Every structure is written in structure tokens, then in C-alpha cells.
Image 1: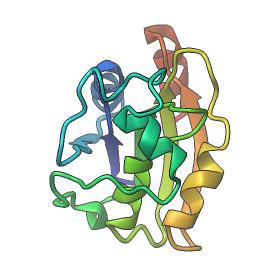
Image 2 (image 1 turned 180 degrees about the horizontal axis):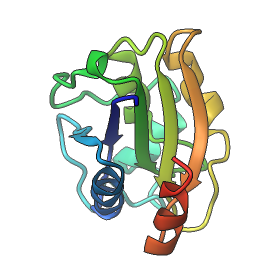
Image 3 (image 1 turned 180 degrees about the vertical axis):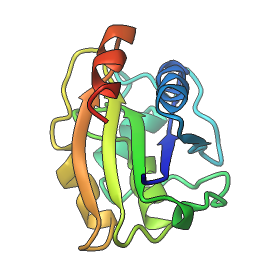
Image 4 (image 1 turned 30 degrees about the vertical axis):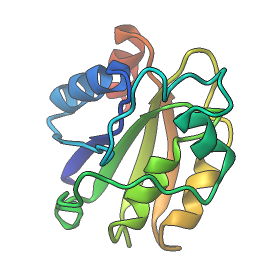
Length: 155
């Protein structure tokens, strides 16, 4: 059996709740991807083109700093990586996380929370941030407990 890690970024707490339930359901360890500077409500205002999240998402080279880089990625075979969908992709802090560790030979399965969109181009946007032998697959959008329970049965 492979050792699994649920790593997640959550700006508002929604994805954190899902990640904790997922880790508990599959017996995985849990790691919070935390920005060096936490996001405020104003930062998350997608209707404001000058908000922090809007600026970051409009600049694909943006790499928000992490609060730490102490995840023991080498101890895991499979990483379930969770985040909220922003502008049909993963927030750029997920690229920062992926570029901060060696994921060579690992399998990364994405999960996300979303207000209405699917994964969009999340896999394509994240693939350049890992080595060629890292497998990234689209998992599920998990907006309800029933979706989580169904998905857990397939893991």
C-alpha cells in the first residue's frame, strides 16, 4: 500500500474542511499549504482587478511565497493536492508549492472546491511546475460530503 499525503491550500476555509475529511477517510497525512502572507477578504475579491488574487491570476509567472517548505514529500508515493478553483485553474501558490519540492516519480491527484466551474486547464497549468516523470491527474471537484464519499471509494 502506498503512503498518501493530502496537501491543500485554502484561502477561505472551504477547501480545508474537505481536505481534513478526505485525509481522515483515507487514512492519509495532512499538510496545509500556507502563504507567507495570508489572504484577506479584499485580496479574494475577484471583481476587483487590483485585488491580490486577481493580480496573481493575471500573471502566470506569479509565485506567492510560502510560509514554510517543511513538508516531507519524499515520504509519500501519492499526493492528493487540493485547492479552490480560481479563474478555471489552480491558484498560482500551487505552482509555488510544486516548484518547492522534488515530486520525481510521484503521483499527484488533484481535488478542488469550486463555486461553479470545473478543473478547466488546472492540470496543464501545473504540469510545467514538476519533473517530467511526475504524474498529475485530475481527480474531483468536491463541493459536498456525498461527492467526497463517492470519490473515496475509488481511491
